[in-house]
Structure formats: structure tokens, C-alpha cells
Length: 503
Image 1 (cartoon, rainbow, N blue to C red):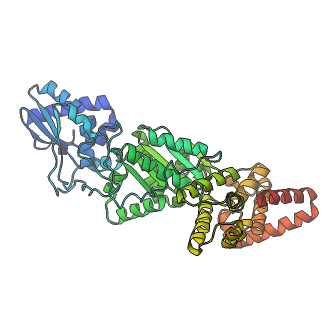
Image 2 (tube, rainbow, N blue to C red; image 1 turned 120 degrees about the horizontal axis):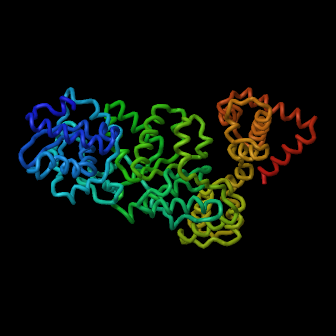
Image 3 (tube, rainbow, N blue to C red; image 1 turned 30 degrees about the horizontal axis):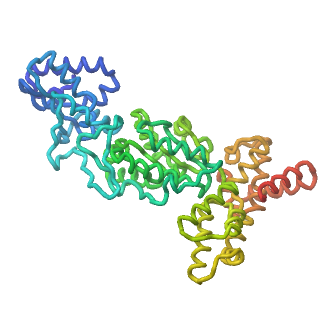
């Protein structure tokens, strides 16, 4: 038994505490003992009560929820007069066992309500302003109190600080999400996660191109949980903000507070996780946060522009974790889905749009939903501001720049996917360092098509292919042009791919 844990105790109480600790170690296992019970100190012992202290409020809530009842029962075996065990937050002391800090940094907050049903386990609120106590966040608009995985109200509710979670757009609800074949699977998975109190798919990983609805579904999940089960705490923010919060915590030496905030929520939602690719320290922290939440059954929802396997610059162990739940792809929109989105949008705007105009927009604006809705807004606003009715001619005139851009709009990502599928290689091979001919030749074809079908510069194209130099792209374009002239079958392949992409 640690001398720090037992210092100042009378001999009889010291022996009793040692016996309780040994019994608990055998019951809960070495790992849990080291994390939660070893850092505790006995502050006071009387005939009827014992006061235990832990380094942080975070640990206090967990110990009360999971171990205080059992501690009380075991101590009663050796001290029958014991009536209650109090758990308080101790002042931070120089020389306190480092296990205390390690435990508070790696653990996850649990439900503090378990103490309410036990007569001998009570929580004594720590004095305000003590060192070592996590600061109580000020409630803000939209902030929800933390609740434990079991669904009970936490003892001493913790609120998510207003500057921690990102803002939610009230327009992005499930009711406003138009479902079609390209997104029905992702929608169904998001809906299930939002409606179930326990983690259904962990993590739920949503991926797809720009403007296809990932962020809409993320906001919809958070809004649904906030409205239907306000007791559950939710943090939604971008991966970029997660990184900046982590860097600030390192700079201000508040990493324990950072870990406590992110590992004590019921639902953690990270948007655009590809942003932390190549950022090793942030990935390390996210990896441990991910593991801590999953181990406690807390829900994680993540979005990205690529599948976990295709995320460049992401550690393999993190890719493996991201793949272990449910991965849902949001495909490019179809004509029918785009038409349905336009109809729903016009109804919400309260503007009557002629069917021919909506059909024209659904046919011409194919890049993403965001541009499609923007085009409809422009048409409706123009009609209202100039006082003219909406017609096909006026829509063509107002959107001439957008239509011209979409007539040629093909993304490099789309080219890479199409070429990879055609030559039966993985999309990740487009970014890899592999030089085998079976991979290098399709990669050159994709570079050639990117030069022909997009307005990207050679350096930009090179960066999209694993950070290659612009001279590599120039060589690829020249090589493909040479092969087209001397190899009819190859030329036919390239022409077919171009028609498929332009169509």
C-alpha cells in the first residue's frame, strides 16, 4: 500500500484500509485498481464515517458511481459501525502519486447517480475555488448537462462549455433532409444513432464528397438528441477546432481539463476528420479519446471526405479504429434526388418554381447539393428583387456563370475513383508511392484526365496524387498522349473514361 495513501492514519484504520484495498484489487482487477482506487487518500476516519479524497471532481464522480457502494460494504466487514463513505476532491499537493494524474487523464466520467440509491455512499460537494478541482462550466445557450451512459442524471451536472462545441444550424434537421438512393443508408444509420440511448454503431463514420449532406446529418443527429433527450451531453465540432483546442490546452498546461471535457460526454461528433491527417500529436490525443469513449459505450460520430482506408496521413491504428464501426458512404446525387431537393427547398422558401426550371436546374447543377440550393436561392431572389416571374430564360440568364462552370465541372476525386474502378485498383493507390506498372499506368491516366477535364494547375493536380511534383504530372500527360497514338486499345480506354466523366 502506498505510504502517501495511508499517511496519518491510526494503526487500526491503516490495516483496515489495506484490507479493503486488497479485496477491491482482487475484485476489479489490476488495471481498474491502478486507475481509480490507488490514487485515493483517506482524509478522515471516525466510528461511523470515512472521508476519501481523489485528485479531481472527474474522478470523484466515477468512484461514487462505480465503487463507493462496494468500498462501504467491504469496510463494514472490518468496521461494522461504519455508516457512510464520503468522497471529496482533494487539494492538489506536491508529491501526490503520479497515478492520480494518469488516471484522471485517461479515464472517462461515469454516471454519478448510482450514489443516490446507496445509504452509505454520499458525495460531499467540494469547496469552491479549491486547487485541483475541475472548474464548473457556465451554462450557455444550447449547452446540455452531462449524463452517464446509464441514462441517469449525473451527480453534480457538468455542462459543455459554449466555446467547446461548434454551433448547430437549425435548418439541418432530419425533417429537412431529402432522402434518395444515394444517401438512404447514411440517413438510416444517422437516424438510428440519434434515436437510441445506447451506442448502436461505434463509431458511425459518414463519408462523401463536398456538399452531399455529411454536415447536415451530423447537425441533425446533434439537434435530435438535444431536443428529445436533453439530458445527454453532445459535443459537435470540426476536427480543425479539436486540434486548436488541444494545442491551446498544451500551451496553457491544461491537458487534464481538455481530456476531462472530451472524455466525459455521451456523444462526441467530429466533422471533417481528414483535417488531422499528418498531424501526429493531434491524432495521438484523438486516438486515446476515441478508445476511452468506446470502452465506456459512449457514441462517436465522424465524417470525412474519404473512407477510413483512403485517408492519407492517418495512422494505421486510427484507420483500424475508424473502420471498426459502421462506415456509410453518401454517393453523388442522382437526377431524381436533385429534383426532390429542389422541390422541398422551394416549398420551404414559399416560392412557386415552374417545373421546367427545376428540371433544368436538376440536370445542369450536378456538383453538389450546396450549389444546387444556392442556384435556387439566386433564381428566387432575382425574381423577387426585379419583380419578374420565374422562367426558364430568366434562370439561364441569372445562372449563366454557374451553368458554364458545371458544364465542365469534374473533380479530381471523381476521376481517381472512376479510373481506379476501371483498372481494378484501389483508390488509395492513386496517392501511394507504388511504381508497379499495374498501378503507375492508371495513375498517369487519371493525371491526364485531371489536366483535360478540370481547371486545376499542374502543382494542384500533383498534390492530389500523394503530393507529387508538377513535373510528374507533365510526364504523365506526355506519356498518355504518346500511348494514345500508338495503342488503339489504350486510346479507346481513355476515350471511354472521358465520356463517362463528362456525361
